[in-house]
Image (tube, rainbow, N blue to C red; front, side, top):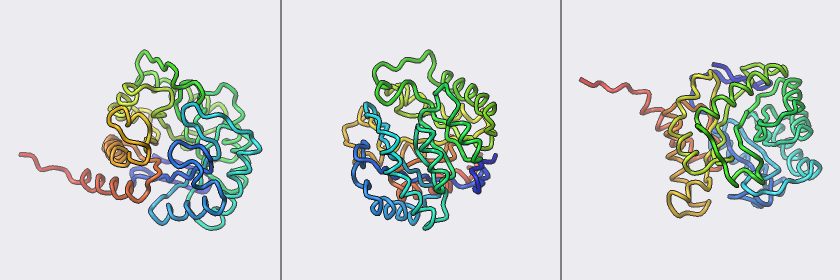
Length: 282
């Protein structure tokens, strides 16, 4: 199974890809404001590469529940200088986390190779046409509603079945827009229009998505659903994040998106070493 993103090609099975999060925002739920300055964002990104990130995911607009949208001009101001700098300083793949086609285009021109789209539930095709034009990778994330509305009252008949059908329907639309299957990664969108029960059901049922024949990305790093299982603020949720990551790897997930790259690399490489041994059961 291949994932192609411009000049990058990832062939699975292979070691889990770890995607490091670089939030160039003042209001992200976990690290908002820490890397709003371009130099700070670039330094943090390069540190994540040193820790083992093979993809850097850069975002200039928070998508936490209830987050207010920012203007296109402001999002461009935040992320494009960072992408320009990183394209000159590192060889890893750069991903732009955006809902805006114009921001995606500018990021691809600046050196990004992947579009991470939390608004893949949109009805208009401009974003997909941009991805097709650049032969970029495309992370198609499931969400119900928008960041402003998604946690108000999410309802599913069958969350695993509904998300699976969404992915099948999106793949048809992406193909019609000129995006090949090999450019697509699916993300079930943990925390995006889901209750605690929905999130846990998706995490327990990740193997179901293997039938789609595309790589899966899981983004659970420090997410708030964990605080409904135990009490901990965002910066105290690393153990829970690692538990989800290792279980995801055991259930066929190929990409893990995380704030905590060094710890996640260590966890998933250990899980892979264990899983590579077939037990001799008499």
